[in-house]
Image (cartoon, rainbow, N blue to C red; front, side):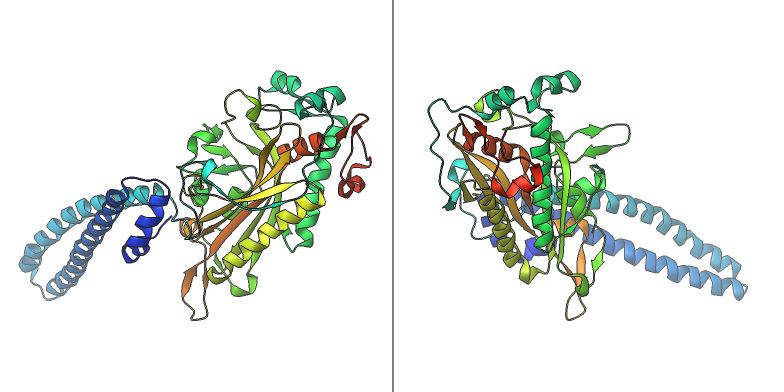
Length: 423
């Protein structure tokens, strides 16, 4: 969430940044925020003045009563009653204004970093680099949705029977490969200095607002109505919310956490090859890395996280590319995001497997996540997160890119985890 002071002091920068997101009525949105904040301040000032007068009158009444001037005291009490009624209305008006201001700020996305390119859709994203060699598969190579049936390692029909479309059942070597990937990703993160946490996969409304999933992605999350709880769309939500309403000591910075969770997303897209099989699911597993850093360190941390994801893909021997997201494709809370895509040789297309983002102070302001700087002043921290990695499309690429007439070769780095080298 943007701070009002930041908006007023950097209005031109905010306007230009939000225009990168193709928001047409930026000026009107900012004017509304500034007007609400002005109304909040003026109402608060009048209320404070009245409260100070009421306190002064209370002391005056006490003095008059001690002096036996009861009639004068009763006359002064009339003003106290007037102030009480007025202050009640002012307090109610102030609360309504605060809520309206908060909601207006919730609905404004983060200001993109200056390096974010302009653009409307994912077609306008900027390719930063490309790595690895795309495998040349033999004629008749199969997409993963055919391979998993042939080898009976993932069953979508059973998932439909138990739950519905988008909830696959992993079986036999498919389940073992899935577990191998999870353990490999966790071990690599721990080697890189991340501390493992196992958070809840259900969060409350405050957590959703804290990291910005609410109100932006409310329709994409599974909601448990009776308890007003949400199934997590990513481990970013519970892990980052560990530090909600916390003032972190400098000795505990930087914070680096990794967590493995299932993730749940209602939108699974329309029918087509881009959503077939493992390409898009309602439930999937993911290992997430989260960092909390001092503002001056956060972009170095972003590079560090991107390098970590790159090493994972290199060890899995998967061809991949890195994209810098344009303003129109940038997530609501992000200031800068790099997407990682692996190449699926059988489908002949790129599949997104990771997003690594710096949110700067946007989430921290919602979370009230702060630290005391060298001047002992309280300052907002920066939050970052990244998929390291999301499993379904990694699994799809491994199956497709490593197939031959005898089956599927397991990447060497995973064999100590799977206990087998072929499917």
